[in-house]
Image (cartoon, rainbow, N blue to C red; front, top):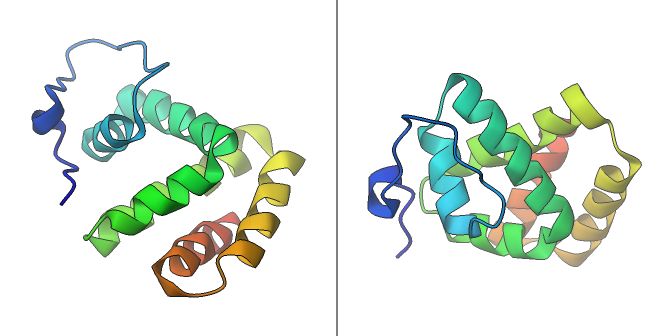
Length: 118
């Protein structure tokens, strides 16, 4: 079982850390516990992680038992693209992922991201 509890990773929100190079599990936990500027920085980094390793993100999000947490992560990735980047690369990745994961929990994760994109 995986943890999405920031405390399990020793995460505190008493200063903005350099999130570059954080593993996906720790970054996701950071994002789920963050608000304000902490959330903006975390979800921006998560968005870039998604662009770098979309299949890894889909696989990891699929392991998160709490559907609400999966929805937050998926929704925020799409929201970051819509608000700050509007990247063609993001849309291309979603097209590839939709073809690769047409069903199951992975397909549900991809559909959650695509739904929030619209």
